[in-house]
Length: 343
Image (cartoon, rainbow, N blue to C red; front, side, top):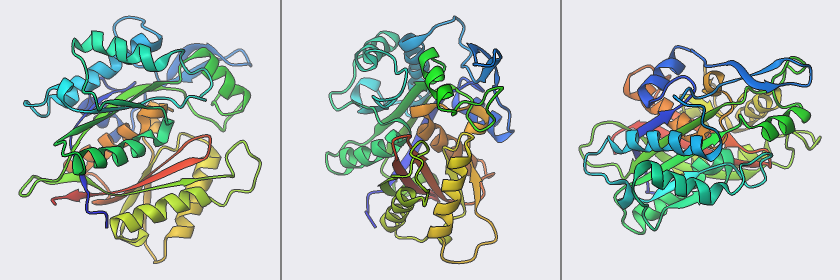
């Protein structure tokens, strides 16, 4: 076991179904989605369905990303009255550099506009992680180092993204990845911001969602590769996370994933389970919040953590031992083992 657990001490969310973590989590619990017609049209002449964040003005691009992220950061910081956003490292997850239609100069403009929105600077250890879905797991790994090796008491993991961008939708539609009037095997594009405050578990603390294990892998048989899928990359990530957490797949109660609608993702998750589970279980349910908020890219990991944190605290989760897993189009895979309790 790594001996470096990370407890979730607060969260913030801005999604297409709620402008705060409690609102978003309540909607997802009730299976309420925010899907409606967007301003984009598919190749068949029908409006593409997506999940847009309903802010007051029709902001677009990095301006909207900064406004969503500022709201989520302020909500997250409010969980600790002593916390100042300029005094805590912020590990900001955004779209990977090779993502089709990625906003131009995203790195520089987002930090600059976020500074304007919040009216404050950022800690020198704050960094941007352009790793897409798996960015949240990479951020947890970096947060461990900051907390246990550099003695930071708290770190904020943030993610913001939008797939409601013309070039992005066009590129994914051409690859048969977007759900349209002519393709039933795809995702609804969405947008969101999610933030998580992490810290070491405290003796005598109230029960919290705690990350115990992390694992990473690379899948060669990606969705566009045409190679037979064995889920090798995801299996590697899951096994490493289980070793890191000193447990087995059979000890877990349910799974939460970034699956957003494609048959490939469900097949991969099923194969990974069959190759990782070594004892009989009556049920190992799988949750996928994208059913309500759509494909939200780099904000997916933080959203998953916030959703399960709320489910465990309010007593409607499927148990207290959970496997999270995430994957990128380029084959990068990540897995995380969480439990809910005290240190």
